[in-house]
Length: 270
Image (cartoon, rainbow, N blue to C red; front, side, top):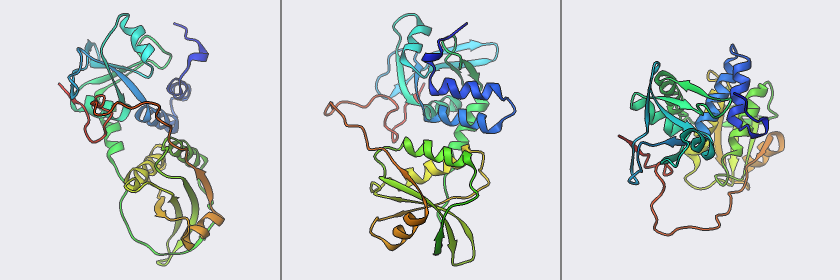
């Protein structure tokens, strides 16, 4: 089956790179990161009641699978008729399906990235995403230009930060020397939203893991732009400007959120 190249999505492209180099752990990790960060359209067995969803389950030789797609029109093509669905972050789809003992059929029959992800793969992804950064205290004594960092990490950071619109204004990556003699790298955020620190630190941790450098370390801190430390870091570091949040043109007051779109209230599968 042939698919138009112009219709390819970022996940199609990541999948193609992974398939072209099956021995590359880096490309495989990159695909899974894209899958976790993408919005997926999960095919449902029936309409959701707003808090509980029941995915349509297909019994295949490889096991029981739910079907999800990275475009709404791809789900429509697969279903060939109007069908209920839930739009969810890929990380939530992976976690909830793994907990239910289901695999994921991704873009089956409608895209070049079609593949079956068994429960074990989803469970691994959920556990990988569940590993968060550890808190620590250290006193920096000097900052310098970053050096020796692999291009894979810099690219992963750039892509991850580009998806964090509105959480911070800018981040700067610099080398750092600590009072205890340790040397490393530090990513400092400024202009960040109060309460967003954990989400930003988690995003950096994921960029490190999915770049294949889970054994490495990258410290994260949060500063104000009028602090002496920020001035020293900004003068020597590599700058990342985060995008501004998209303006909402309309808002329904008091309406329920779509299932799965509230991170504090993930959907319940039944």
